[in-house]
Image 1 (cartoon, helix red, strand yellow):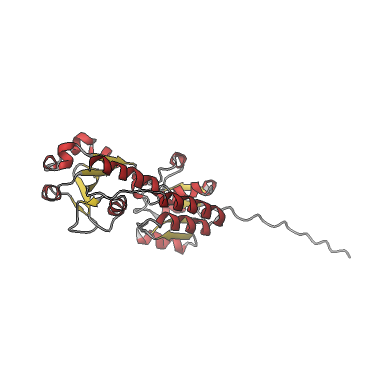
Image 2 (spheres, rainbow, N blue to C red):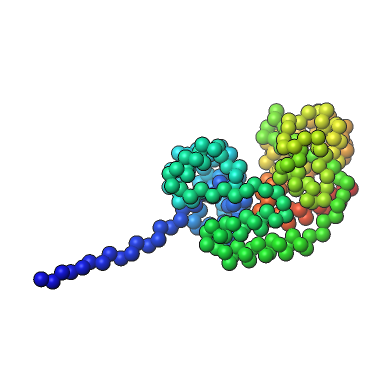
Length: 268
């Protein structure tokens, strides 16, 4: 009797299905040319513009288990700011690989993130090349230290305005770009008061573009109580920067620092 053995062909390796829950991670994924593996992103993923065409799972701090699971991802990648904690725990319990990188704010942060993402996705060579580019751009920066006092304002609507103390991405961007944070009394974010505004007397107001839009534009900003008593208010000194470019600490960090430093020098 002849026994015929049937050999099943090997199944192809399952293609990764990645959800990025932070704009900086999304930017890095595109830079490393692994964007075809992206099936969805969070609402902070605004760069490059191609990312805006992907489905959105919500804001990175307020993710839902069901919203992410509906896309059947194999990997969820973001920063440690992603949450809430229960959602992250739920995702891990399903067997999905969840990788959240440290939320740090220094000159080496973009390099560290690029190398970490490259290692995770088997793109070590590409990551090292990009990291070297960022390192070269950073080392070539000629940032002039100034005494300009900058106040960072963040707002989603005119009734809720916050200012940045130390320990934030905004504070790091101000100091790394050569200026001084006008707020030195506290860390993190606190609601803006007219007293704090007048006391700090900033030379310039720094805001993410989306905050300015949500606030009603620059004319609305100059109507904030007390701002007319500051140098920034008197001279209408304000700089608006794309949110992700300003606070993302991603591959474009050298570009962001150069933009800010040039602005500081103009009004010193």
